Length: 151
Image 1 (spheres, rainbow, N blue to C red):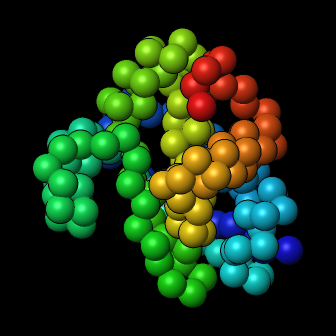
Image 2 (image 1 turned 90 degrees about the vertical axis):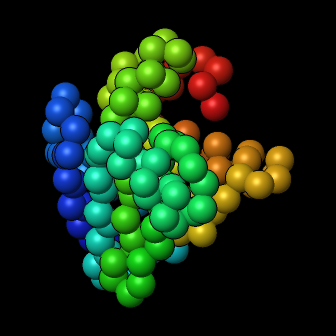
């Protein structure tokens, strides 16, 4: 069994407590398919909850795209699975749009980012279905329910 250590940096005011993000990602690590891709014994993930402006800078620098996004994942190596950056303003906007709490949206984005770090993608319909299934399983473990139609 792998112990998932989660470091959370809140660079944006109003974001939920770090303990919430840790609970979500540790729950996700309990999904068998996710657990199978984590390093044996101990794994680390860093999460930065930040601004749209910082997300745009990161996206320009690392993806060559000149816009903000809701979540970015940066794969690490060894025990350090990687880093996840989440835009808190985008989280709040999307929560309003889909009719659920901003914590629910944050949980979705954190789980989504973790799946990307572990090699899942959503480029094809088959990949999207699998990523959706795993995201829902991860959120279920944290007792989080998405608004109907969110994914």
